[in-house]
Image (cartoon, rainbow, N blue to C red; front, side, top):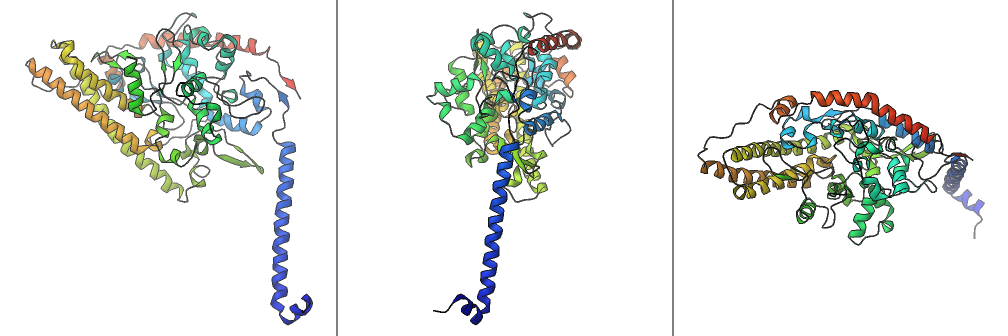
Length: 500
C-alpha cells in the first residue's frame, strides 16, 4: 500500500481535496465554537433576573426590568401611525365610515359609539373614553357591569385572586375603576416564576372543562394561540350574575354558537326598530382563525403578530403586537418567498372581496329592520312577525360574526364568505315575509330608507341625542379617572419588589 505522501505525489488533486476538506471542517468547528460561546454569553447576560415580583404584579414596567427587550417592544403598541386598507393601529370611528351600523345596532350601546380599538397599550384609556361605558360619577352608577373589565388589564387576575371570580363580576363597572388601571401586559399571559405562557382568564379554562378537555395538556404551539383566545373570542355575560362565559359547548362554528344561544333563549337586546331579539357578536377571532388555512398548517397567532426578532445578536419574541402587514419581512416572509408588495396585495384582495359581500349583507339587514318597523306600524301581529324576526336574528348574527372579528377576511376568507352568503339569504327570506305582511295591509310600495349618509343622520333617525352624553363623559374624564389613577398609585406604592 502506498503512503499518503506517495499518493499525493502521484495524484496532486488528492492533496488539494484533503486541504479543502480540512478547511471546511475547521470552519464548521469555528462556527460551532462561536455559537456555543454566544449562547453562553446570552445565558450569562440575557434574561438574568434583577428583581423578583409576584404573579399578581400588574405593572409591566416591573417585569420589564428582567426582560427589557420584550418590554421595549411592547411599548411600541403605543404607536398609532400604521394604516392599512381597512384597519391599522389608530382609532377609527366605524360608525362614521359605515352609518348603517347605527341602524343595525339600534337600541344597543354600539349605536352610540363604536371605534376600532388601538393597541394593547391603550386598553384602559379606550374603555375610559368610549361612550358605551357611560359617565358614572359614583361606584354604583353607569350602564355596564364589572365584567367589561375582564380583558382589559393584568389587574383583573390580581383582583380575581383577592376576592374570587364570581365576586369580581358583580357590581357596576365604576366600582372597580380604581383597581383596574394597568393596560394589557406581561401578567396577562406569563407565569412570574417560569415566564412560561399562562392562561389567566377562567372563562377559557371553564369552556375547555365543559367540553371534557384539559387545557393544561394542549401542545405548546396551540397554547401560543390560546393565550390570545382568552380574550379574542365570542363570549357573553350570563343574565343575573354577569358571569363571563364562552358559548362553546356545542362547538365554535357560527351555527354551533347560535344553537347554544338559542337553546338557552339568550338575547343581548331587543332591536329598537324591528323588535327582534338580537345576539351581538363580540370578536370571534379565534373561532374563525381555526377555520383558516394558517391554523390548519399549524401556525399560531404569535407567529404572525409577534414574530421572533434579532437585536444585538439576541433573539427574542417581538411584543409589538400588531398587524403583520406592518412587519411583512419578519412575519409573512419567514414562510412565503413572494415580495412584500405581492403579499400585501394578496391580503388586500381577500379583504376587499369579503368587504364587498359584507356591505351587501349590511344593506339588506338595514332594510329588513326598517321594513319590520313599517310592518309593526301597520298593525302586524306578533304571530305574523315571529318567522320574519327569526330570519333577521339569524342574518345579523352571521353578518356580525364576520364583521366583529378582527382579521376574519384574511384569517379565513372562505369561511367568512360562506357565513356572509348565509346572512344575505336569511335577510332576503325575512324581507320576503315582511313584504307579504305589508301587502296584506295594503302597502305595496317599497319602504323607503331615510337619509343615512352620516353617523349623525342615522343616530337622529333612531332618536339618539348624544350631546349630553359627551358632556357627561368629559366631566367623568376630568374628575373620576384622575381620582381612580391617584388611588391606584397609592395602592401600588405598597407592592413589594425584591432586588436580586
